[in-house]
Length: 507
Ligand code: GAP
Image (cartoon, rainbow, N blue to C red):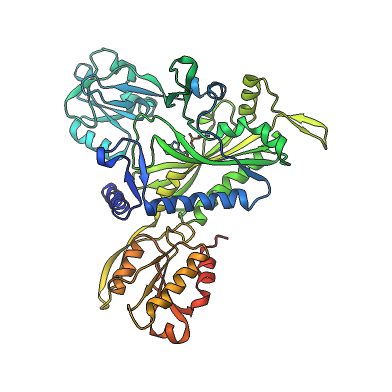
């Protein structure tokens, strides 16, 4: 199963590179870890994910408005939000290899028997590296977690003991076979730093935002004062965030530069449970509506000990990626923690005065916070399919297709003249232009056998292919082929855009 999953990931990564969805950033210089570029098709797919989110959560609603805040904000924002003090991961260095690992993502594997012969392997928590480490460690290997040793008390070995010169410091890293020595875990702040202005000292230090949410809280008063919005209402933002992740991995899943789509929904305290449930269920449904299947998409409520001290509820929408089950989005009931923090730190009263009830209160907040790159990756993983389909001569061949929802697919339609003569190109070009005028991303292709043209579109997820043939020239009808079912309908050429728009709709 793990092998198959890896295969799927390898094939998807290769397809994304080959067809121009995703490239490694700075590839010509050997790449840079944790940064990715979206190619011509990837940028369309990602833009469609964002536009679908924006349309459904802002444009279609009366109770949410948008915002686009600066990436660099006053450093006091991050003091008030707690990011300067607490936004960190525990990390350890291997003294011999100089590699750095996240302590909370490592498992310890004890090797050997008896107190004196202990020797450890440390690995990251994905199943494949665990298995490889177990294999290296041999038959005496037992498994225990560095941060949650209570999982298996028999193998409880506190991380500090191992690293702290007790004689148990011999380790083998996931990417080396030679034993090494780990440092004590240290807290590592994930915010990227820079300087604003010509003088680089403490007073000019600034941070790239690690989340878009704080820009929304800092502007709460501005939005209230400049619009007619009154709780219950939300403010939405899509934008880049930056985290200096210790171990970026799993393709675009954990990157150092990524995009978030966040809503802060402000309401009265007594209504907050109702709105929490509403957003949790609505956000889950959004992913299902756009093609993720319920077998792979899970809603996981956090238990009380996982919750931040100010939160009264939190759920993760998780997806079963080929590399493991991981979160796409979190929905949290954050109380009025953030507005309280910013009120206290800035000295500006961010409470809301309800002129109907004559009450003043600090609204509570429900926060659905998703990642654009993670959603895009989940849609790609779900869409990747191999099946059998007949070629031009009717022989069954393996075909690769991306079953992307039509709303998300980079191109909505490809238009093919069957022949390069007899009026086919002219009729096809007319439909092509018509599609573009209607705002549909369309692709024109007159080269090669028709079967090959279909395959190239299947592989990039184009849901509809239109073929213009001799009959089109006489009766203005075309065939429209469905990527997934291979069914071909004959429709009037002037109905093409309406047909496609209809199929793109999400109920
Ligand atoms: N304002 C709340 C917040 O930022 P989070 O769980 O840290 O919460 C929200 O982040 C979402 O942002 C995650 O569910 C994920 O989709 C995305 N995200 C976070 N860190 C990421 C990273 N390093 N790479 C890609 N996406 C990330």
